Image (cartoon, rainbow, N blue to C red; front, side, top):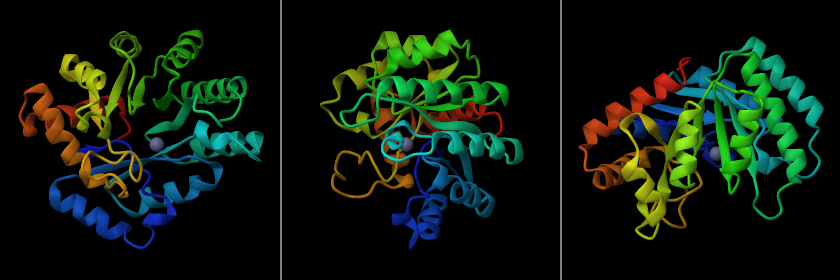
Length: 255
Ligand SMILES: [Zn+2]
């Protein structure tokens, strides 16, 4: 099984990262993808992927962290330089965030589209951050004729939006949200997806699972996500593990 999205580079994991990775391995979680968030995180994410064979990395500028004093031009130049030099599985985490307090949406769209073009020129898929922004993301993807696909991280959109992302070659990241009984829409969408349409993730340390609120999320809890998915979709845990691993490797061929 693979956790297709966790921020294990965050400083809060510095003291027990290795132990967390060992726990993952002992429980059968054999891979984790760490997407970067800012220019400052690039080198750490790359170093972790080099240090630990089970880690893969993605490089990109996360929309939530674009507020304040961010030197966009330097960040994008460095992103391009590193994509030329180093092997990553995707450009990400990139996208659009309509949460109050995030930076101006026009600026977000511009930076997102520039990164989408970079992904296109390097022939890489993308890891998408979508918060209330699914239609806007789809508009940019269509406008720029981006065909590289990727993962829509923590997908929480409608059935219609799910179908459009699938048509563009994306898979949907399924995480802690579906562990909450009240997440009726997310559970309904998950139940209806074809086997080829989704991957598993935790977004550690964020998005705690039901029963773990208030604690830092951990990549090995992807197993609990999988258990919940197996109930909702009426499939065995083994089947879920095989299907989602295949889906991820197909979507991110550099894995
Ligand atoms: Zn993330």
